[in-house]
Each structure stands twice: as C-alpha cells, then as structure tokens.
Length: 149
Ligand SMILES: [Zn+2]
Image (cartoon, rainbow, N blue to C red; front, side, top):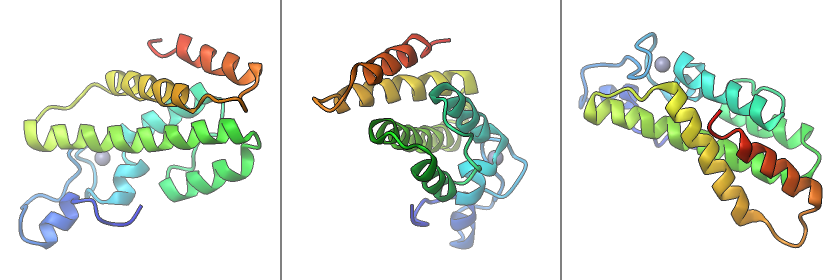
C-alpha cells in the first residue's frame, strides 16, 4: 500500500487539519504505520483475526505481515484466504477511522472484529472452486462457526 491515505499527519502537513493525533486511540500521531498496526485499537484486530485463522500473529505492519504470511503459510488456498483477511482488516480499520473522523463515533472493537470475520467468510466463499479440498471447506466452515463468537 502506498502512502496515499489521507491520514491526519498528511492533512496537517497540507494545512487542512489542526490535529495530528490518532482518531481511534488518541495516543500517537496518525500515520499509515500507526494505523496499521501500531495503534492499540487496530492491533486488537490483527491479533484476534490471526488467532482465528490459526496463522502466526502478524508483526504489526502491513508489508511485514504480507511477506511473513507468504513465507509461512504453505497451503495456497489458505494463503489466499489470509491475504483476503489482511485486506479486510485494513479496509475495516480505515472504515472505523473514517467513522471517527466524519461522525465522531468510535465503533466498538468487538463489532469491528465481527465485521472483519463476516467479510472474510463471505469473500472466501467466492474463492471456492474445484481446487478446494474437503479440508479447505471444513476449515472455512469452522471459521464461519466462530464469526460471531
Ligand atoms: Zn491509534
């Protein structure tokens, strides 16, 4: 991901916004590195989703997580699902951040986590094809069971 997100640091540099602090935690300047995933708020999601997918916990950085998951996840189907999960996490964090920016509302992390899980299951169902084995379908089914837990 390139640095195109209009974070508060960028908006502050452009003179558009007076504040620089993270809208989700308020504990640091809001830039890409902080949002994905130095921020305590967003770190909860990557930790929770990693455990749910049974993949090594990300090293709290998008690019590092992407590379590491690419190395350690051998199964190509599971790897695709995990990449879709990383994309869903990033999307939902940015969505939550924009809710905070525009509506002054912080979505509860538990709700965001459920949205991420539901999105991953939904996207993964679309990936099912003749290359999927029974174990892949069973894995996805087990993930689906825990979407709302
Ligand atoms: Zn933060």
